[in-house]
Length: 243
Ligand code: BTN
Image (cartoon, rainbow, N blue to C red):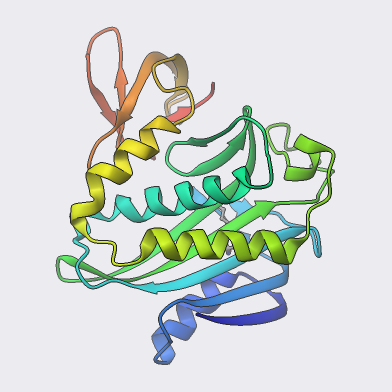
């Protein structure tokens, strides 16, 4: 593992992605930014963080035997690794909101942005960006956002949290191959937010839909039991889980 620490950067994902294109990076290179100025989130959203209070970092990870069809296993492995790490800091009621938001109760404390580079039918490498709200206490206009501090009343050492997450991520990603899918999926589904509960979803057209979350498919779609369909599959752009 190699860690590159930056004072300020637009986005650690963008920076590391560019570095991976231009140079031969060491596997498990990590870029950590003290201050991320233009963080990127899923679905083209932004990611806000506060200097010295949150963790924003990206990991370069190579794969040898991971097929494109199984690439959701990276998402499951990383979200489970973060969950395991923050459990050590006694963050209450943690879960993974599909596909990979990290929650405490129903509030988001962390997010993951995975950008895979493919070669034929395999994943060559992945840029795994992680943003974790550690010690921030103020989230203007983001009612669903929270932090480890807000959930516990405690302040956490950023370095120690980062170290714990990295150890867990590398452990979960070590020799990861398509055959690890079913065990990872079993663990992921155990920790899936609102699993087996009636939930409300919003479609891109703005209509609402009720259904029971049953789990995920092998390609990472959310499986929902709706009134008309016992196992409807949704991709990320197709639904937004409201609660
Ligand atoms: C999301 O929940 O929408 C994903 C957020 C991912 C944010 C992290 S912060 C470090 C890395 N660099 C980025 O620009 N984004 C990710």
